[in-house]
Image (cartoon, rainbow, N blue to C red):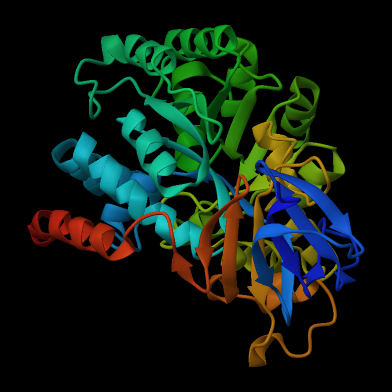
Length: 434
């Protein structure tokens, strides 16, 4: 019997955002978990990885995405959110989203994320059982949330059945160590109060998270004010749907009282700075949220509004955006940005066994090649935020399984996936020209 399934030697270990890297220590992985981090000892391993000139880090956590929307990457750019949604994305989804599309486009997203250091994603979309299958087939850890909306949607043409469809999704969710179930209500302006409360009750009955876009744009605020005479966060709070198992996405437009509401409720927040910038939605008050003690995670959003899934780029944008909008270079540090993409994501998503490297934690690990001109010299972890790129990730281990090594994905055929999605895109391209 071997000591470890995988051992990593000769590398420098960054166990957690905000800590100092430790050079030349041994990482031992057994049965999906980290068994040893520390000084070398005599050991045997099925697979040994030499991480010379590399940094060994926790895998990144993408806390909000719509993975299947890789098919719509670049379909509708440079538009306001409501125009983008109503005139372009919703029609494209109505015509082209299917079980086949969700499976293959999600696999494409998984390839992009794995190759840029993401080991866990929180995904929300339609036909989400196919996303579960795709993530399991690729070896990615996921929280997959069935979409709920009060309009005809892919797989749920009659919105009166949206809660029933969500209930079926949860009841038939596969038993797997990599996937966790959840629900995703689109927003306070596309889901009625009754739908929101029913969805929250269903999530509570199944002990799972409920995600919701909230307080994203001025148009949303105006629509919620017109319909309910209040703001999105106050509206959700009055409905009783905010608690520690609710995750609010974006929360760009919130005042001090609403920050207090979020803190008191215990819910987490996911910020998506690049998507918010591209759609001109605004800048979420992340420094204020963190100061209030609200857990904040980082997400890319979908490829149709970002347009990539690289969390290294997202971390850099997060740190720099708040500096320029506040005229304060100290307002949000590189360490805080890295934390949002690791331990912060783990906290918001309720995955305490991820986000850090420590004996007993899940072996979700990435190895970054530091032997690059743009990473030389490498003084500290700030360079991960301000210098590193997703393409610097050499190796990805998820749940103790080697998923990518030497930049080659080992769990599925990426070329096949790209070809399949390109074939689907032929008909989508005709829509964009019409």
